[in-house]
Image: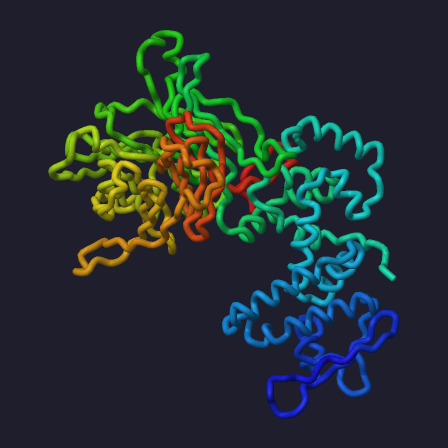
Length: 174
Length: 391
């Protein structure tokens, strides 16, 4: 996957880096976008990821990495502006629209995404997915939260404890 | 191909639960009951500290309504939790009605003016009232000693506030010291008395000011609960024509005049943008908001008319009824929220957005005092409590 050419009018093409997913797919992306990841930023600053070498990411599969990079490419220009002090309201609204649509995806992808954002230290992405998962589970009962997140069913002992708590905190369940 | 759901590490669980709405304690309780590790995590002092740092301003968990209990023929203060959806009736543990009046609430505590418990046996017919400070989260209360210099004047108001030197006031602990400030207006003089929980005594008058020529005597009665802004407690008097301000650190009283308007008699105080003192008033179907500006001669306050909310345009209720009127009944300190009472209930008007939402269906009440605090579960101790001292 290639990133679009840099449009910032600086001297020549933007520096590109190559990332390699756990299933050995190579992704070429602008260094600025990849640098949204605190982990990758260090490697890139050290000159890594360029030329024929790629940066291997053994914890991230290609489907997830593709999604992660979609987020990074979209957010890179705003991040380059040092957050968003110069961003116009239109830019901010556009990013917000993008974010809302971006997390409107299958739950299993959300979990892979938040794990990847955590491992790669992409704060904005981690925060975005965490908010989405919070919205998904905040109105649910403990049992529903377990099912939503794919936890195994509680043991009889755990179940008994949950039942006791439900009596004690009945007001929180109504 | 989607990978199987990975087990979310504790750090990510914390990031997720951190983003729960702070005004819905029930959601935090339910999350804490998912499993032992979630319970440990949500009950930890670390999470409680991060939760309030993340959300920054204490949420409104509910409000106290001063009501008349017709069965008991007495005044009661009822804690009404903010309901979130039709499926959740309450997000706060049920609390018994308190006898008496809720006067003020701040920093997690509610100031009640209630019948002396001992008087009920001996002299139930006497108006033997006392101040009680109640924490709805822990459901603990403390009765204050009876005042020796009693506010004989019917024109007085009292306020409660945390006095913890290092407290951030987002979730004040029960063991933090507190102050109760009593402002009493006698004819055209104002006196202040202060109770400190550290000394356990009332002192004062700590400050006095002469109001000068006042309007008719009854109009001096302070209106609504106090507003804490800029280190001062503010009380509206004279139907909203003037405001008495008490500087807590300096023990100093001052008086300022509110903007001239036709809203007199239907005014209230509100936290202005930037945390200062603002004034609201209703005339007809319009809610006006004034924010403070420096006066032309640099000699004090002046007011600038800001937002005007057309209540009739914002509400779907049938206000075509000629008897419909709106009254300012309260405000949420630190928020840009004003409560107005209409013909069918209480509405909260947000000054910045102009949004008006119905919060309660009663019109038969004497006062409304919003309650703001963080409320995070501590299931390790099997109780709900504000953050402990050890963090």
